[in-house]
Image (cartoon, rainbow, N blue to C red; front, top):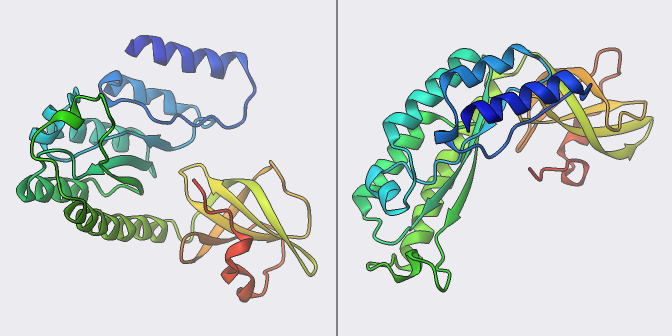
Length: 247
């Protein structure tokens, strides 16, 4: 299976001229260190979404996940070594049946260690007919909600730190949506390592990839400047309708 995925990506790169290819939601056990050699090709986005689900080994076993914290950490270390500037995103579930406060603390500590650039956090909810729905020690909703709040706080801190680390760098951005402004457009797009960027342009940049200098942190994005374009009024960046923040 590992070789099959690697061969598929190599074939796509060899037989198409797609300028940007992003791989998403790859299960950790389907990858090995050799897989990351594919990123020698700059058309592959420096972004991986590796669903963790929990940072507690005992919870992972109850979920029937085929990985451990140690295996996941080793894979992440190999990926970051092979792909400088990697944006690493994940999924986390809090309040899985039987999750104790100690297990949640383990999960929180492991997420802190991994320093993901973005996280999708879900509170467990039972689905009729599933194995998990019949498990004992279902976590009370108010406990799961509090754990979600704490995990979201940690995620926001790491996401902001990752965006801050990119300031001053010129990165390729695929421009997706725009708001018309006096004299041009305020464009919203994604860097190759999955950071939302906003930049002014007097021209239509839709579906174009351009270099952009990341200059300033915004609440949920980074202000950028496309070479050769004028700087906009700073207030433009603070209009939430100008940015498509869905990921």
